[in-house]
Length: 455
Image 1 (cartoon, one colour):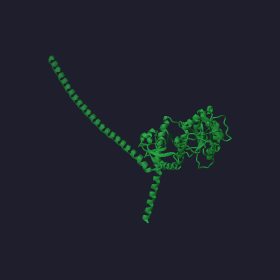
Image 2 (image 1 turned 120 degrees about the horizontal axis):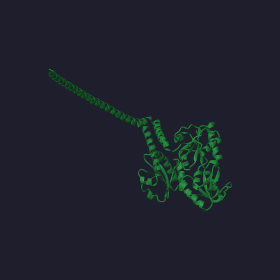
Image 3 (image 1 turned 45 degrees about the horizontal axis):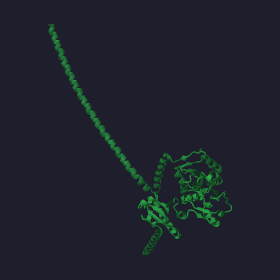
Image 4 (image 1 turned 120 degrees about the vertical axis):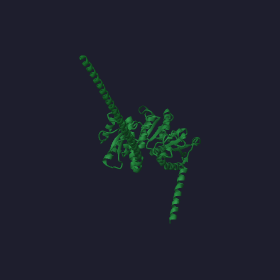
């Protein structure tokens, strides 16, 4: 019985090892010959460090990415490189942290900065590996693509300077979104363009046409418009929103809490995002965040939910309303106060805030270590504190002993000086007596002479 159980365990272990081996076979280990041998291939590469915890967490996901990309017939090859062993190559590709995911296509290296999930990474690889501009030859194809993409950028028209600019912007922002082109006949009947050529974005159930005079630079406009008007915000989204230059108005709520207060605040944000787009979309992005843990760590504050906060991701400032937001009108008033400068800005990236951030991060690290492993926390922080305490005690004790010895020496020297002074006084008294005796003898002699003269 025991032998059979042991054999089953060995079989399962062998099967698991075989699966891991097969998974790893779809991901190539790259070395210093990679740069010369990759030629015209398109590579999706994970630059990692063996000691990095995030890299180890990404490894099974990366194996799944390799399997799915290979099985889909994609031209993309998946590899991984130990950036600590081949640091010169990693440095040449601009690797500064671990893990770093890059798609290498021709002479260009595209950074991936999204969530480290299999689907998101594969979507990034397929988007960047394909053509910069994807043509839509028919209305059916347009409808199919429109259903798949919540935000869709489309160039309409023939060759023009605007198309050249569109291609240039696509080469820069393809890491974030897709770019398409079509003729005017492909567009649905409800789309009306003031002139051709044109760049259009389809999102939020409607469309918006780029206007160079009102919207400015095409790249800036696309960067602002690549998000829906209302988002479910998380850490990665906030990171990407930092490139738009917009302020981010967020309702901090608990998605699991179905109370009227939480749902009302979310509805207020959604309503303002939709009904006041023309007023605020150039400067504000709207959304909600589930829970306050992330926002508290970001602001180094303790916000109670539900609440509203407006973040300036460019300088780490934030704004809090001075009263409860009960209606869309209250939120609009709060936003107008921010725009006209009457709302008080908190936080920032000044020197004092940086010092506060260092202290806060250190405190958070200590607390998290003690929560996860109290014994480890006691060892990591108790041992150094104990050593420092002993050192301080030794220094203080040494100073005290030295002080006592100095005091005793000082007292001894003082006593000697007193004894010396006393001896001098005795000698002076003896001398005085002798002088007095001499004076007495002199006076007696003078008296004797006087008596003789008198006789």
